[in-house]
Image 1: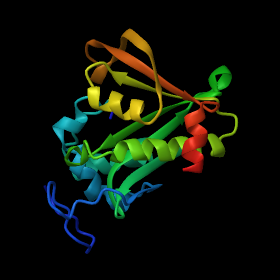
Image 2: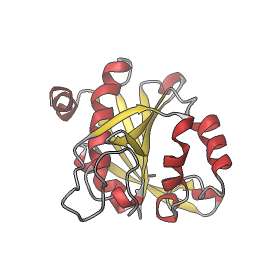
Image 3: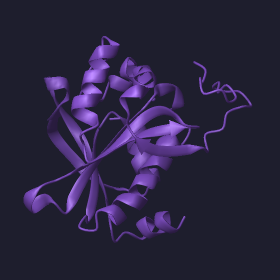
Image 4: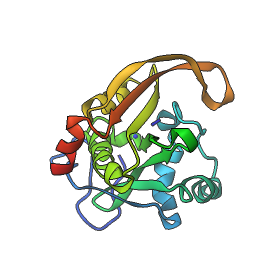
Length: 198
């Protein structure tokens, strides 16, 4: 699931470990194909792709095709931006039929931004808004590889409950079945109201 080049937006350069580090200006916005060069930072990063369903993209064209076919059409998919620059994405995929009361959250962040609280903040932002936007939604869940400790910590810090391990649950990249950890947060959980008021 799941993140030192310089920012090109004209504001101060962001370099890991420098005094200029400021990770508080996090926003979410719709994905756009014009952002593909920013997407390539994480689409070509082996550390990011390790627990994702996709392998690193071999070309800009392959990334454009993936974004156009798989990300933009989803009903709830946003770029995670730092000072306006996309550094990852976060999505909520609704379930259908008798399962329409729940949805699954997923996210990816460029590895140079890991460990800064950015993904936790983005997950809290999504949690506070998706229950308002989709009033029928009762449960938001995430399934994380047992070895993806960083992503598990993100969900725990964002108020999700670790429910248990699903053994041999997912074929990562179509290969060996992997054990996954199920997390959830409910619309009635007290921290959801806290996020909304925060």
